[in-house]
Length: 110
Image (cartoon, rainbow, N blue to C red; front, side):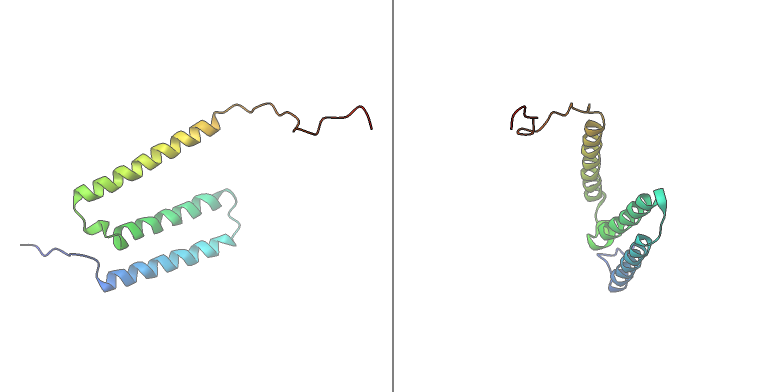
């Protein structure tokens, strides 16, 4: 018979908190570093790692049944699909011709 952990231990919670604080400090430190085009990917990577840590430990997804984890992953997948469709819609739009705003037409008098 194998021993099953029913939830996060105090040590695990503390280590996760410490990792989140270290990642937050790294994120703050990279804020002042001039990374050029790598700034956004680095920030998104750090944010993704923090989100995974929170999901696995504080939401206790690491200790749930596979069906719960699958439902959570399906929700994340649907969010990703909707974001991809929204981005595709915005990127493929044609630029509308700009007209003068009302009240800004040139006057021939006064």
